Length: 357
Ligand SMILES: Nc1nc2c(ncn2[C@@H]2O[C@H](COP(=O)(O)OP(=O)(O)OP(=O)(O)O)[C@@H](O)[C@H]2O)c(=O)[nH]1
Ligand SMILES: [Mg+2]
Image (cartoon, rainbow, N blue to C red; front, side):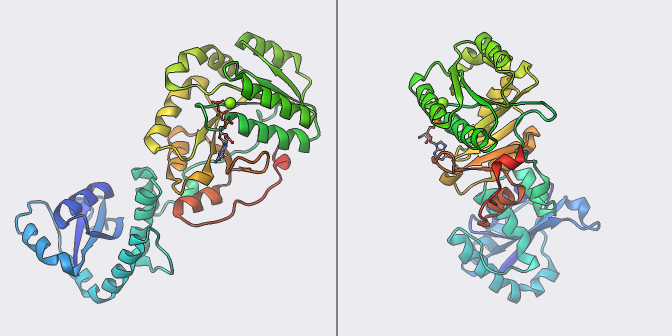
């Protein structure tokens, strides 16, 4: 087993260099902030291992390498112990999950690999975690519905088509409207998908909650005024695709200009990180106050939830985990999300939704 330390400004840059020089099979053994003595060489010391079967090829390649690669004599002394550990890691990585007890020397690399590659956490956040920041400190959650201090809760869900806007609204209305046993009302501003609005009307009837379709932002504003006495108002909006944002501009202005309205941007947790980021960019016109993620049941990669919540400084409000109304919805919990990103399976703590309001 050959070990090489790379000093670099970022762990990613070191990984790139190591993969170029040592080959794609190079194993990330450890990543840690440089010591004061070695800091001038780069902010991070990242150690890679080359499995015995690849050593000859790498040795030949390294003969011509011009990059700064430092041998670490101390690490060489630990080769025998590390070898066993690295082989165990390699085996774990092949099956896609690190498992079992780990010692401190493998924890950093395991975290980094899991966070960055397996869970698609933003590179700089993954580095922060590898350097000791708790995942839970990177983002916020807030599942209190409505504007704090307001006498009533007005909640609007906005988001791209098909992510589960209407289903989630129905879950919220069913659980809060019914549990709280306070007057509630559902307004649908979705005039594009009348069938879906009619489904919501039927559900409202079953729940004994008032329902109306509002065809314009002006009608929505009037309706909000009309239902001033309702403790809960839930507003469903049409899912707007990239090319339809202009159609939603008036609605966006109305929702953004009403400080009382608690607008949640509904996003699918199974979207690719880059797409997720683009969707959030385009929904900025709605000035959402929270991010709500659906389809957690459809993905094992949760890093992007934390990346986006951190990047936008927006709390995560709820997590939808399936199609069942009202069961498959839970208030977001930091521990649950952080465990998901770490690759640990933990059941979302069961909390009474009504109690959070
Ligand atoms: N697997 C899974 N499916 C979900 C979830 N939430 C909603 N769905 C399903 O996604 C489909 C679309 O849901 P809708 O609530 O109509 O989505 P929408 O965003 O309102 O769609 P449009 O209004 O047509 O843009 C339905 O089949 C839902 O049952 C979830 O958390 N997990
Ligand atoms: Mg809908």
